[in-house]
Image (cartoon, rainbow, N blue to C red; front, side, top):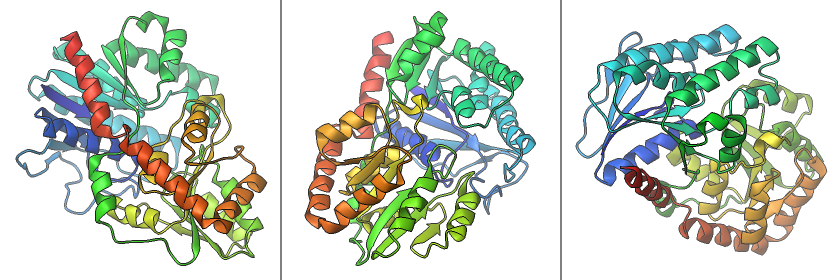
Length: 403
């Protein structure tokens, strides 16, 4: 089969969105399918086009036999600190990717990965010119998520966001769901699409990531280390992590926060106001370096704010920590609670409760064997069926059933 995957973020950019289709596209290619990636000129998170790429024209990466073809289109790269900058960033990619897609050949399937919802709109724009099956990779519910996080406060903007959402959903034939619970949302809030196929494609761990782990020679650092890595945004509630760090300043514990995002500068300022000496901030980094950070840690954190929006969330970082044999402290309500409790791979704490988080961290510091035991249980869980290869094979089987 021939696939066109449209994803705004893609390596060398970092983050979960870039990683998701980088790994899944390589898996598709290795399974014998022909894959083309349509993405932006790399600029995230710096807001500056990466060295070696043109600023105002499309670029095609050097073709490597057996690897996906990668086509990069212009985008208004900027710091995305204002509404105008963010909208300009998203809309510029939507326009340039749509124009480029029109001149590409026929594909059996076109997959658009959203959010940003403007990427989903590409399907609406190009569908009249393409006979392909259109698939929406739904990674988040927008604009509801933006409303919960306070990014959208205007009722007019919310209504416009919902109009965009309806437009995108109308243009697709099949939904890929990063979270199984999204199916209930679609069938309740968008009943007109109830007949459309919905296939789970959850977060998982790729064989490539597992190989990175097996080849790394890094071990736990001498000083007890607590790690958070990923997007530093409005949903992650990292202020609670810093409040826990305040309580543990007298202990031999180091907190590492790795990543970038909208709240990073505010979080650093908050840490400075608290005069925290046991917290360090590291920028987003390539996967190989992130693996080293995970393996040097003793326990890893997976926090989110308490909201009905995240009741079905199973973040990719959680599964990667497990694959690295690290116990996890999870501050999320909902579906993930059963996963952690039944697999005995970590500790659940109430979102926003700094006291409970500090106590959970001390539990692992005082009992190294507990961390080792839960870490090995997490690794076994991943190898038992939460690999991206097994998940993609299930998706392909369902697509073939339609054929």
